[in-house]
Each structure stands twice: as structure tokens, then as C-alpha cells.
Image 1 (tube, rainbow, N blue to C red):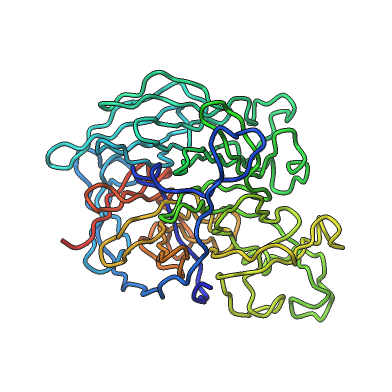
Image 2: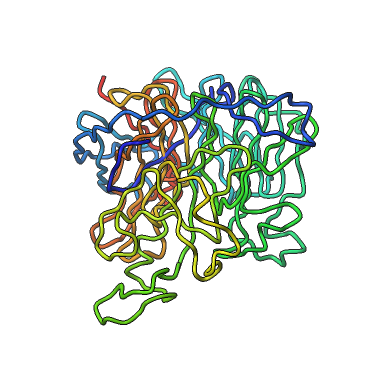
Length: 459
């Protein structure tokens, strides 16, 4: 079991070596060409976290790229001795992927492009377009010299060499998005993420149609799921389900697939008791005080056939369930029934679901997920880009979080970067993803400020 904690969690993303990491395969009746499944080792306790002391540092901004909102002094909090500089300014930057030849790719769904950042001898990047004219490109992953790009409606493979991507080949098409005729333009989570296992299978996250849409679980191509795909034939099976919006998708050093999930909004209070102060029964009421911290955002290790419960079961961070003011624990958490969709438990028995290994506070909105081999004094771990809430009061602040990794387990959250949000809740930026670069620094994307930061450890 992971160590216990009472604070929210952090971000994680993949490096150039992501494709070489092993991933637990799923038995499949259609993707048999991939060979027999290999299972990741059992979880072991992760190292106890040592939250570094955070200090405010001025964000260094080169004069050539000091446009708004970085045209004035900005500060961020990082571990003592670390520095932050603005490395590049791609507009609406989302996920990041290091390349085998030392570059960093940035997905930009809003403009339909993949941007290529190429550092010079001094480490400063030149920005150019690798791919354009795509349909909301988001997730990217390498398998050797093959680059996979997840558009909202398809997964494509490219030959990658010398900073160029050529020979586009569609691996899997017909994925649901806002243009799908059967959905009538309604699709809340159209962006897709992709990861590659050691067995060379692709794992693709398909988000839910809406906040609560049970029909996703029975759709012809199941939504709110993670698919396992044969990259040669496109044959696919559902690897995990009940994954509302698993935008964070990455492979750990032991080969296990992990996801960081954006969970639901406006969940009703599931107990026959008073959650407020008026003495009334608050069962099935949507209460701001409860919604602010429920349900937690899962950071889960996926195995073949796993169900994360959405929209029938919600992972619960309460040490004393349903008690207002109780402490929160985000490690090894069980589920409670969603009383709006599964009040009598007939839709899904929540008690039978495996506990969620780790989690973030409700409405943290984890987007990017990656693993690092050994980050400065922090060691190996997971990086999570927490985008921050859009509807919580007060808002959950954006941050880059770090979870120590050891023998298959993740320890408790440590904050690596924060400070984009003021005490009033106003933001000048929002973290999306964080990856470890070839130089040992952490590169962080920000889709509000339109930036990629270089967060460097002490020399």
C-alpha cells in the first residue's frame, strides 16, 4: 500500500523512452498478432515523500518572447535552488513529447498543429511546424522511429527522422468526436491521448461524451474507456472502462499503464444525514461544500478489464465517509455509490471495484502524465500537470505535481511548481503537462499563457 496523505496530487508525462517501457498487455480476441500478454509486477510500497521547501522565484523571460501575460514580472514557487525560465511561446500549448533526437514536440489542438522545438548549442529553441491541418491533435508517443499522433477522430503513425514526420498511415479511424453524426455535435471530451507499451501495443484514451452519460459504456465504440490497439492492423479491444476522461496516460518503468482522470462534476451527497448545519437529511442534494472536494481525481494503475466505476461509483477521499470537515486520504481509496445514477447499487457493485492507488483533490483536472527516471534530488517518479478547477469555489490552483515511484507504486503528492493563481483565484497561466528533458530539466506547457517553461534543478 502507498503511504497515506491528506493533500492533493500531481502531474506526469512521457519521455522519448516512453515507447520502450513495458506495458501490461491485455488478452484480446482480435489483436492476437501482438502475442501473449505480459503482466506487470505486483505493486510494492512507494518511497515516503519528502516535500521540498518551495520558494518564490522570478520567471526569466527573454525579451524576444515577452508578450502578454509574460510582459510583466511573474513569479512561481519551486523547490529551493531551482529556476524557471520561459523556453518557448507556442499558443495554446497542450501535451509535450521529447523526441529521439533531442527535440520537444508540442500538441496544439486549437490550431491543428504539432510544433517542433529544436534547441541550439546554447539550449535556446527554434520553433517550427512538424505537422499541420490535423483535427485536434493531442496525445503523441514514440515507438523507436515511429511517431503516433492522436487526433480527435483517428490515430496516425508517421516515420520520424531528422526532425521530420512523413508517411502518414492511419492506424485506427472513426473515433468519436464533436463531428460524429450519432452524437449530434455534443462531445465534451473529444481530445485523445496515446501511450505505447513494450509489447508495441497502443493504448488510447477515449473520453466521455458528457459529465454523466451512462450510454458511453454501451456505445458501439465504448467511450469513457482506454482501448488497446494493434498498431499494424487497427484491431482493438477495451482495456479499461469507467475512465471518464483519462487524458493523462503513461507507462511506468515496470511496464504498467497509468492514467490520471478528470472526474465528474456536481455529484450529489450520498448519505442519509446532515452535511450542513440545519439538521436536515441532505441525501441526493447537490451541495457546494460537498462538490468542492468530491469525488477525487483518480491516478490509477490500469490492468486488463479494470473498471474505474464512472458514472456509477465515485472514489472517496474522506477518512470518515460523509463527515464534513474530515481529513482526506488519497491513497488506496475505495468507492461509494453515485446516488444520481446507481442509488440501489444495481448498475454496479462499487464494493467489488479495486481501490484507486492514488488520487488528486476534486477538480484538480489532471491533463499531462509522465514518468521520470530520476529527477534531481527527487528521484524517480510521476509528473502530473494539474490544470486546476473551472467550477470549484474557491478554485483549485494549477500546479505541477510529483509522485515518487518505487517498484510499481506511487507515493504521496509533492508540489514541484505552483503559483499561477492568486489568492483571489485569478490566474495568469495554467499548467497542462510536464516532461523530463534530455538535459535533466522539467519542461512544462501552459495553454493560457501560451508558453513552455524550463524548470531546472540546481547545478
